[in-house]
Image 1 (spheres, rainbow over the protein chains, first blue to last red):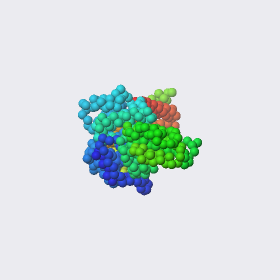
Image 2 (image 1 turned 90 degrees about the vertical axis):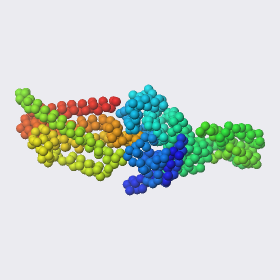
Image 3 (image 1 turned 45 degrees about the vertical axis):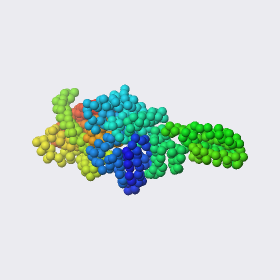
Image 4 (image 1 turned 135 degrees about the vertical axis):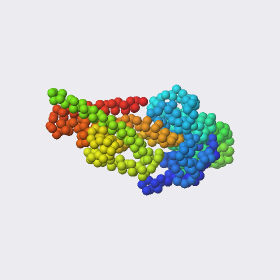
Length: 337
Length: 219
């Protein structure tokens, strides 16, 4: 395990009032995975992330990163450990008075990196993030996406084992977000760095994460593989987050009664690409029309939805529903919209 | 016009005295005020090295010195100034009190410029494993350089204003000349000449200060 969080909680006192930012949480993050935490602001995800490099001190519990108990470290030892835990931020947090080169040089200075190797290391990092030609620019002359690339290069400078991403794409436009997420995925694959990211956008989770924890009111209420979360959300908050792929609306002009029903079918995994509709047409004496449909690819696995309007005798519709319920890989979907 | 030519040597001498007092005082204000400002900021910041009692003590000390009317400060520290400069009057003697008044002022201004440094940048530096010293020299001071430049400008101008009072200990200087000749002797020509010189000095310092701080901005 790369990160073991055991019984960790965090309280603040604001004007004598106790605020529980994080309830007692235990969480294991596997080596080499991309773990996402999603929640609205104030859900405690930022607190949880900041505990992993001790930017926040836990009130209780222990945090172990690759075999080292973090909360036992102080001073120099903590600094050295932090150099192995990279972090990127929503607002990039670059030193404005330093060039791109100097910003990266700064963290290499922090780790007393071999001075002779510094220039080649910085070149290598900038090539990795695709900013080789911006070395002497100041942050204010860079776009948001470029700034985040510098942030990533800086975070990777000391060969970290873990990369923490604090809403790293929330200040970026959708296209730039995609390119930054691609870069994070590449870093995860090529360098084998464990990534923990927090976000309030399900799109980000869908794009890069392997597993996801859903947070609300200071606790993780649901945690699973991203595909499982999307295909079978349990908690109300989770349903809220995945609703945009479940947002089919029944057209108002359709009359619903025992002989005219709307059924939404959810296709899982490889079944999403099979010929179920064909079978429905063939085996049932009903009029079937397609109202809506889509296939999402999550972790490269398809998750399909099809909204059908079925007209026919009541028994026939019941038989059709039974057929769907008995089929492997397809389910009738709830609509959360 | 004749009167103006008559007082030229006086003005020249006073200008030198002012320059001397301001130079000595700003030197010590920066030398001691910058570390004090850093200390005030660092001991208050939970991200860096928060020591609440030390911060409160330094803050109180700073406020106490700044509360003194300058003329009382001069008189109050006379023994220390005598011991330090081995004299009992003159511009160097007056510079002790001027420095003492300028140090806490500069320290507070520096602290304010540090407060303007983006907390996120400091957080990122800590997350990167940088030492406190490296954060001070490589993040705080460069990021606050513009504010520090403005703080130096403001402190110099304040010292120029304070130095007028330095006359009570024979410090001399332009301001002193204005008070002694212009105010006590109703010497209008000297009065106007000194005020004009003071205006020019202050303007020059401000223009140079603005130029330097804007140069920081352009980078």
